[in-house]
Length: 291
Image 1: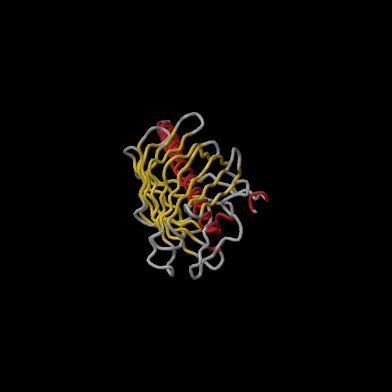
Image 2: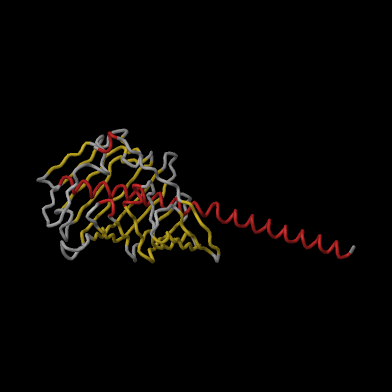
């Protein structure tokens, strides 16, 4: 009888510990997993701006350098956007109106202003982007984005130093997040643009206050890789590399994988590791947007 009671108590103890561990894991992963998705979403919003800016430079400022590929049609800039190019002033204005859908399905409005000192692929060129009432899916985007071509020669993979100052994303309910960023991106180009890659190099940093009012900082510790091929497979997320995110006084290490096209990342914090599935950013194939 005594042995039976001890066995019952032991079984209860195992169940109790398992229940506690399950609760601990749930409370740990549920809110903190949002950090990964929120960070990815903020990154994606500003990357949309970079893609629009660089494509506008490629399609509107003819690049005669050896090996340059001038886009034959719009990919990131939809046909519903009105593009005005002042060659004398070296400025480009992109007016999205009140309701313009990007190829990736996001709805934008407002205006992007671009000024430049030279062709995109020319080393030393500086491209400055600002906004006026520019929204992405209802989120107001603010700040000044400066892209400098720091490539040593035209034969190198184009490399850009990108800074964001006074960056801010405001939700429709007035909640906002701020961001300052300093990153270096290498565009690894292939004969087929589908095989192009974008590498966010080690040493890239970002910081600000998130939507919860908590300060954060980001540091790329292993080069982050985006692949056009994966985006065409409806995955708009890094597929390789590691970044460190510090939220308040908690550190998270985010590992994006080994290069396969998926939306799974491994997150490690406080000695625990778990898998987070990034929200898919589905690209909408719309004939009106693809040109």
